[in-house]
Length: 153
Image (cartoon, rainbow, N blue to C red; front, side, top):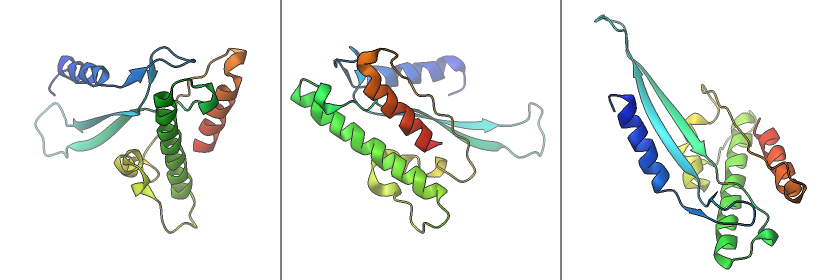
């Protein structure tokens, strides 16, 4: 893209293709992970012989894990199982990439980890924002999310 408007159009197009469905916790719950990848080129404003700097920025919206016992519909349970398995694979990859004693990092366990393999560990910076629910009824999910975020650090 060449400008902000084109970038936002792609972002909004991706948002419209995202799978959402109602659950007991969230009426508009993401039922799959979303990844927006920005390839950024930075060059000097003036013509010069300086190098162009290439960067990649992944914006990843991880679908939240939910306790399957709180889900009423069979289809939501199936989705939750896939989401939870994918989050588990992501955690395994992050832990393995941070462990200097590990010879193998299982990037190919899921599409998400394979896509993010160049952005996990190594020369990259990562920020995780965990969304939690302050209501007592959602305490289990909040604790689970906070523990996941802590392990990802």
